Length: 240
Image 1 (cartoon, rainbow, N blue to C red):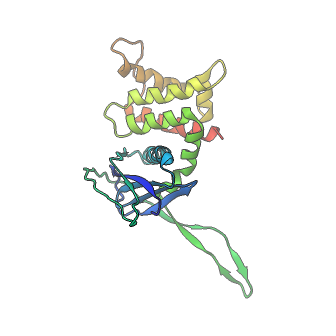
Image 2 (image 1 turned 60 degrees about the horizontal axis):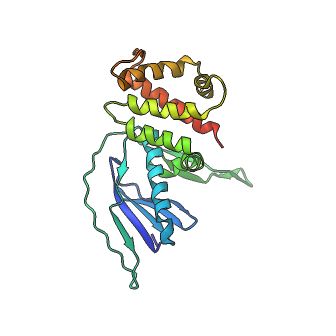
């Protein structure tokens, strides 16, 4: 990374420590992962907070996609000195969780040459790569509701012993942002499901949110978690 200013932090919970990539490098902001550490670099010091936010959102999107909770604390910042040196010092614990990692060959295009000779350039698509989450991050930066929903899910639902609090807040944020007389039905429609698909989640989540509530458990915690994920993805697909 060749940016003048930056910050770094170990990604707690990240299972693929061999992954090394620069997954964003635009507008004077660069994001890189190496040896399980997230680096954010900027040319302009005033953009450092923006870079950190983008990095955090990438972790949230990745976490939601894989259902693995990730966290990072940028507890050390650095600045390139006149000799070109940088100071780095950080020690954090991490925890690992087994997960399937998929690497597939993706055909990008074909070139037909004479004598029936075909060249098929290919590139490797790694499911662990943070580049897979760029579209979600871009949308979250444009839509505050999607951003907050993504944060609720990644921080309070994924790997959480009591996920229903986060599930309720995530769905509530999306529902309140929609228009029409029946906003629960509208959210369900985005996922191609009936209104009960949302109602059953909200009803179940009420059981954990209040000691005294008319809510009744209709689904397991895991089913609520999975439905919330489906609804978030559908909501994200519905926004430009």
